[in-house]
Image (cartoon, rainbow, N blue to C red):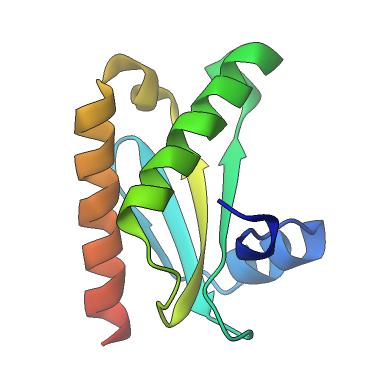
Length: 111
């Protein structure tokens, strides 16, 4: 996932989360907001409850891989994906299916 397709700045994360538009699932919480640029962007947040820095970075790489396979970055919204502890108890395939369902639910809500 290229750098320009990521939400990187703290104030951008905060502004998307403060809108309080989200979809919850056991392994993810996905906040979304109408995009402000020409392309959609995605941010990933992994809390310290999921392990040390090495484990959190591994999880971020896995989620980036999932995003590359699911998103085409022409969506009408920016997304923040917060990874929750049940992520660790599931396989990669189960997690990608769950993220796909969350994306579908967001698209239904936006219309």
